[in-house]
Amino acid sequence: MKRAILTTLGGVAGSLLLISLYSRIDSPWCWFGWVALVPWLAALDEARSWRGALVRALVMNLAFVTILFGWFADTIQIYTGVSRAMAFLAIVLLAPILEPQFFIFAAVRHLARNLAAHRAGSTATRFWYVTVTAACSYVAAEWALPKLFTVTFGYGLYGSRLMRQAADITGSAGLTFVILIVNECVLASWRTLAQSQPLALRLRQALPSALAVIVLPLALLGYGVLRCRQIDDLAAHATTVKVAAVQANISNYEQIAKQLGTFDGVRYILEAHYRLSSQAITDSNPDLIVWPETVYPTTFGTPKSADGAAFDQEIAHFVAASGRPFIFGSYDAEAGKQYNAAVFLAADAGGKIGFDMYRKALLFPFTERVPALFDTPLVRKLFPWMGTWTPGPPPEPVAVTLADGRKVHVAPMICYDALDPDLALTSARKGADMIVTLSNDSWFAAGIAPRLHLIMAAFRSIETHLSQVRSTNTGISAAITATGDITDTLAVGETGVLIAPVALTADAGTIMLRWGNWLPPTALVGCGLLLFVPWLAGVPQKRPSR
Image (cartoon, rainbow, N blue to C red; front, side, top):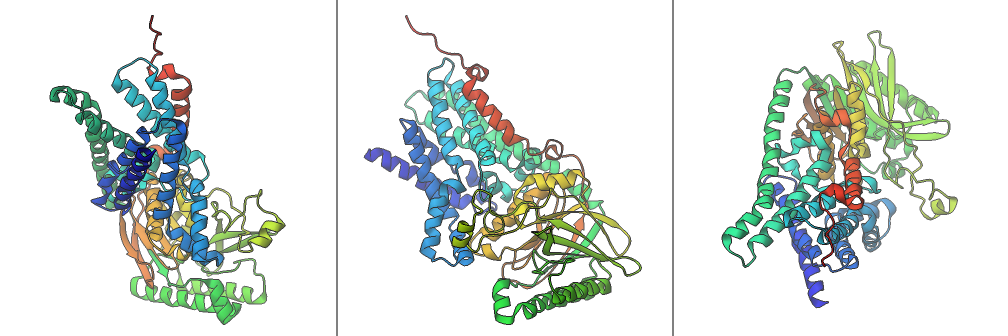
């Protein structure tokens, strides 16, 4: 028992140290991802039962969430007003929901090891059966089980410009799959080479797994070289749109309203954005101006009061006088339902104002929307901060006419939308030329959260080959190329305007665009087949000895 405890704690501690380095999401730290799980996998191998495997998964789950998602406790404290201790306790209790894939992976891997042990075949065949089955279960679980954050190990490879390009084939899930395979191969190679057998025999036995450790990362690098050349050449000859993303560094609108009053609070927010936008127009002459999510904290186009109608008119006059289209965050209402929305506002040649609206499709659970099962008067009385918004339909590209007459089709995303590859892929298939993301990251301003959110948004550009501009209220606002390069940013707490020449590099050449987010459901089916139709794994049942 003592040895099992020490093995578990040592394996988890070793992996968390390596994961902490890998989670810097930068070069050269991205290389730690290829070995980050090895200590924990070694601890899993020591489990003698499925219960032991699940205990090791639980320890990993709790340590992973509390250490790498500690910033979420600060968010809970800020949003709900509970104490830091209660917020941290909530993180611990939510850990199995935040990262449930560890349990599925550990259980399936243990089951696959038992199945392989009772079937004929070479050691290499049994190893690959277990490795592929377990990796499929991990990727499938991350996709199939509900998670607040779709964070996956593959995002850590963002630090390598070349390796991350394979996301246009498989999405970030494919990068995670390869990372899991390589980690298993590193462990297998190490154990084989550590055996007390002749060196030549050890080298021969370790060769297949060692080759995988070398070949798979090299394959990602090689593919990245080809893709970057193609996309860079496309960008060099593409037309560009100069976009101004405004970051006024204003947050906590409710507190502003309490201090200044609702009218003066809205006035304060708008004046800050008017001032920065006017300066950007004078200095840089942008084609398009973007303000962040919910920057206009009331409904646009369907005013709730005379003051609201006056503000609507004021914004419209400002946009018309600027001679440029604007995209900004607001609310929308219809049939008693309220939406988090992006407003596309512009004046035609005659000065007549027209606008389109995108309603946020993916709402953050509980703070923006409440699942029907929990949406009861009692629950709302206990938790008055819970959201009341309604999700909108899947996005459609919005046509934006620039001052020079050019028409650009924008794929809109609002904050949490950026976590779902299907939303960006849907817009790209329908002819979008670029992505514009509006976000309010002030609730996640602690720790690595703003950068992580930015990196996840960047993967939507890699998967679609669409350049992107991201406007946030408090940072990080950014310009992102079709290869996922973040070319310019406004940091957390910075006030200013990001001026970005955005290359319109849309093409239909990615597998993700053609097939969608195909790998996770394929992994789910593959895992089921490997577990329940064992003859498809090429590992026939042993014959009983006589």
